[in-house]
Image 1 (cartoon, rainbow, N blue to C red):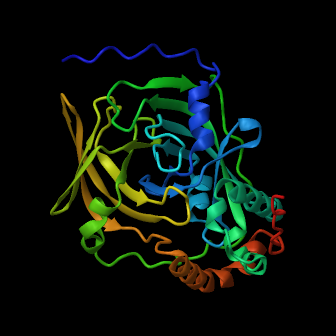
Image 2: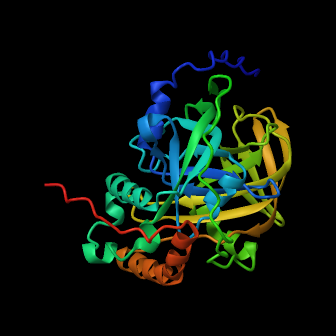
Image 3: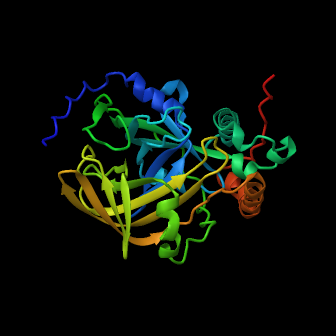
Length: 346
């Protein structure tokens, strides 16, 4: 059966619909995609926040592991996919894809850290519930933050992850540009702090079945990453074959990234798997099938298990990252941020 024609594009600069803003406000996680020096997309789950006066969509990364920010500072073309129903307050919320320009903010680490402590406590209260204050105040290696502010240029949305119908669109006014990022820090960035798996096949053995949210990222014709929800995943010898709904935008083959993740309804931890490689595309009447020939799996930072197990894993991570804190602050000519906890609600 022929698909209906897509709805007409709105006038650039029209307000973003309230339903889309509701998704932005409610989401606990979103997929954030940035580009490597070679132009390949790397996609990781993040906690998204509304920016000041809702002009931007903001995500953060730790000062001690700044790779997500450094990719965006080098190439500001990024995207956010809001497609995770877990914890979103609705069983089947709309799916929203945002492509925009990133501005990296690390010139005031104390203000960044204060904001993250305040906003993460409000959005993810269960993640630190029961942790003594003196322990949290010693976790500057985690709470010290770099913010990435994303100015939306093009927004698409669908009614659900199945992408059954063509998307609706929003476009920023002509000439919209993202503000410049803060200056590049002195010296070189820190090396990777986690080793990547030696075998992607070992990582993939059960991830596709156990982690139920899968998203594929490719690079569109404008050179922006484009992340889309996957409706089905099949393991094959050299990677994965994934299915996307008939309303997915058409795209060509090239470098790609398949991200799998999951977390509890009440956010106390998360697990991620990310595979990168080369995508080839088959378009059929029932949607798009894409084949990802995997080159490798990326290192991931997952916090899983019961509260005691998660706490032990977090402490081990802290021992690896804490020694970086002073150096990364000094690269930005700033002192190590202090952790000021918000007051407990009465």
